[in-house]
Image (cartoon, rainbow, N blue to C red; front, side):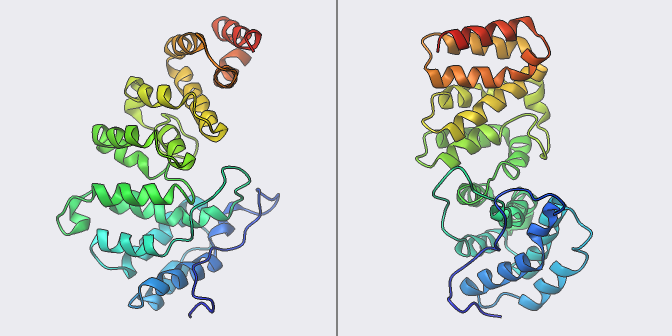
Length: 287
């Protein structure tokens, strides 16, 4: 089945979660159809029949996250065996990057199978003809986070190749694209909702602090909100460290950073933590 206008597309989706409509429907048969058509545009040898059959089989009872993994496995069976070759095809099939950071809607979940593909198959040389696949995996996540988010797929790399991945993220904190900068903070959150936790950062968040320091004054609220939520994660396991960071950031801080601090401390403050309440009061008074 070929696309009439020869341009990649993603399924139409609502702007927000609709009552009574499970998120899993975002990755239904229309998504399978779009995946097949988009890949055929750039890779005519794509095993479309095998992909459609494998992707559709057993899809219905799965939730949204399991559907992402299911479709990633279907892609693996139908694309070239070498991971890097398969990824280059997927990257060539992408729609243009997002041009905004708010009101993105739910259509971007179309790219969940793509990030699942990177997370599942991009870590080991065995999936890439014996060659290291770190660079192509980083390239893929750099592009995918501009269209959806690579916050889920970056986490296995942080768990298994921490120093290497953190080095790359520290390079990306100055990227011109806010989606890439946000990934640096959001992807390293120790307790990111829906995602695999990062035990090393739950135990010791200090390796990630240079990223938060670099992004706290980011021009984008989209990025600063992620920094605030990350600092809130740290406060759950290391409140004293989080409070120390807030105290340091309050010195000659902008109104934007003061908002970030108040947002980061909202949960311990709601629980009545005296230090959190005091810091929130100072941040508010200095507005």
